[in-house]
Length: 202
Image (cartoon, rainbow, N blue to C red; front, top):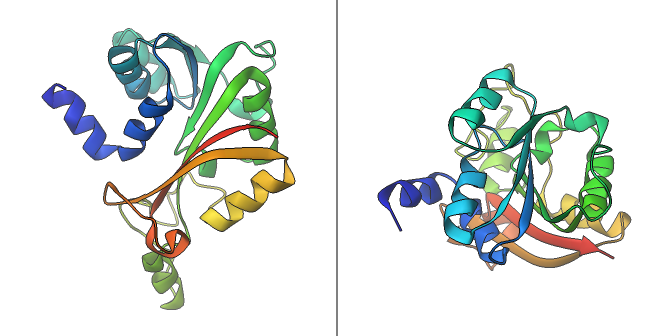
């Protein structure tokens, strides 16, 4: 592993979990792909190929410069451009909290892909609870924005997401809860700051 790849995994520990779940050479769709860092990493680490979807002009340009296939689209309008089962995996990495139509996005991910990977900051972490108790909106490494400039529209806890999966008949195949890059097995909704899920249709 190169130094650049190690730096990526330190900054985004969910990427390592996602990469571990991806079989080599498979087709991947990354929703809200940003500058294409995850897709580029998966190409190098797992020989994955696919597309990213991004709406921001600057980030789309960065994808192009990085040699990442990208489509400029708004996730809120759905994934109607893609046929059923177009991809092996559809990824929503730390973007769930920034989309408005969460249920529709989850359904569309599992229509277009065989498996869906979702990661998100856990609003149930003890530090977030303490900040709310003290009368402030939480700010942390996992939730770095102030309330007045945040792109987040839906913050949720691990328990909330589990209940959403149950409601949508989504099967959770694997779940990894992390804090500071390390796995959390005991009281994950309280002690974990980042959750990563591997899901299939129920």
